[in-house]
Image (cartoon, rainbow, N blue to C red):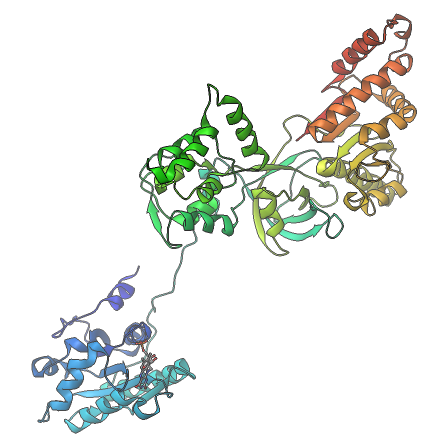
Amino acid sequence: MSDTQASSLIETELPVSKSTLGQPPIYILWAGKATTCQGFAEKVSQEAKSNGFEPFKIKLSKAVGADKRQHLKDGPVVILTCTYDGKPVVDAVDFYGGLVELKEQGWQDITYAVFGYGANVFEATHQLVPKKINELIAERGGQRFLELGEGDVGVFLYDTWEEWRERMWDAARCKYSTEKHDVHLPKFDVEETDITERHKTLNQSNVKLAEVVENRPLTAPGFSPESRHMELRFREDLQYKPGDVVSILSHNAYADVRKVMKRLGKHPLQEIVIKADFAWMHKDRSILLADLLTKYVDLRYPATRANIRTLLQHVPKTDETKATRHALANWSEPTGPGKKLAEKLAEKLWDKFITVTDLLEEYPDIKLPLNEFLRMLQPMRARNYSISSSALVDPRRLTLTYRVHDFGVCSQFLARLQKGDSLYLLVDPSAHKFHLPDRLDIPLIMFATGTGIAPLRGMLEHCAEMRKKKEEQGTHIEIGKTLLFFGCESRKSYLYGDSDLKKWEDYGIVSLRPAFSWEASKVYVQDRLWEDRAEVVNAYKDAVKLMSGPSERVILGCGHRQAAQSVMEKCVDIVVEYIEDIKPGLGILLPKEKKEKKALATQIVNQYRNLLYVTDVF
Ligand SMILES: Cc1cc2nc3c(=O)[nH]c(=O)nc-3n(C[C@H](O)[C@H](O)[C@H](O)COP(=O)(O)O)c2cc1C
């Protein structure tokens, strides 16, 4: 804060100690109830120097009596006040009373102007106090240097005030022969703190700012769970490959924050000082509780059994709380006869995503202090999402394909974002090399379920864009045709099925093999794979011919763990049936027994895992 700013905020008392700057003083006498008048006084104070005056702000209550008045003669006096029910406000009562009772010319040699504000709905007493002060001072010998200003809180209050103030300065400068000059008015200066500080606190550095260009549903209206497509635009070029992931630090929904505050009986504006050493937060840091709950902790993390034991400790041991104690004890019993029930309930915690807050709501008997609640929470965790685009299209663009989970902090946060909103995220090269092979002419076999399509969509976009770019240059690039087995619940959740995937199929990049498990035919992705196994084997054989080594990834799967497992099992069956095509010469060595055949095929499939076949499961 500059000196000017600091001084303008300070209230003074009469007599004032004047500086040696040689500027005449201006006395700003004010009294109001709320902040209106304080703001007016502050404004005059801030503008004084540039009009050649040294400002002194004084409450009207401190300007009562002859001894005080005698110090007001060497500069203009500006009086700012209002009326309540025809009467002065508390801080103006003595001043007003003194003025009414004053018999002699006590205001002689004092130059003054009054600005009053009030509401004209109070017809009978509208502006009564400022008007009276204005008249009485004149009667008591004061010299008015400007007519009364009358602001109405209902209409144009600040216009009236600004115009009056301008006239007041003109008149004051004229009377005291001061000059208007440029003084550095205290700037309304703010410094923006590093917005990525939270990311650093939560162990995430090098985040990049992106703007939401699009955030639209991919599933048909009314389909649940909803999946969405988000397009982001960055300020700088990105270097990512399809298959890479981004890491996003989200916010808790305010509804969740409010639930906690209400249950713990905390006011929304409660600030706290962190006294314990949370690993992820500085000691002695002061922070708005709502801010901490919104940004730093995960409010949707299921309660642990240790959490429930802590909750149990905070239930008073009375007869009335017996049922609560019994219920919580069932939950947290790790051994003994209650173990089975406890395990079942613990599963429920995860199935239903039951949080500490949910338990607090369910059991009002728990009297949990705030520090204990905070201690139980996990820090907000960044969530990873596969990139579903290719940087080849535009290095500043990146798309995400995500499902909105009922209990998902991050997916719900993403779903709330709108076009034009911004978001920080970390673009992280994929740890497990879930990438396209270097040679794009190798045909690929892809499996996806649900939003597992994300990285594969990016890869297909990459292939399509590569071909398009070459065509634009008048050259041709051989792109191997991908077989995409895509498991969806129904056509309503066939993500990109009628848009991008269709477009790339028409372009010869991909051959689509959707499997709809909720439709009458009930086809799962592994069923479709089995149906088309002859083509899969042919594609595999074509790929092997072009491969430079066994670590070229030609089979890529992304989706639910269970689906990936079923696909692997089907691959084993395919190897059994097509062993001679897959491993020429091995056919005759294949054992006769079905079980042993399968064991050998499983061995072969496992051999290629993470080499030729990579999966990304969730
Ligand atoms: C209870 C009440 C009584 C008021 N009486 C009067 C009045 O008699 N005359 C008038 O001009 N304004 C009257 N006002 C309007 C106030 O002067 C006006 O709202 C002003 O902005 C309040 O200033 P403050 O921000 O210092 O509280 C009244 C307002 C309230 C709430």
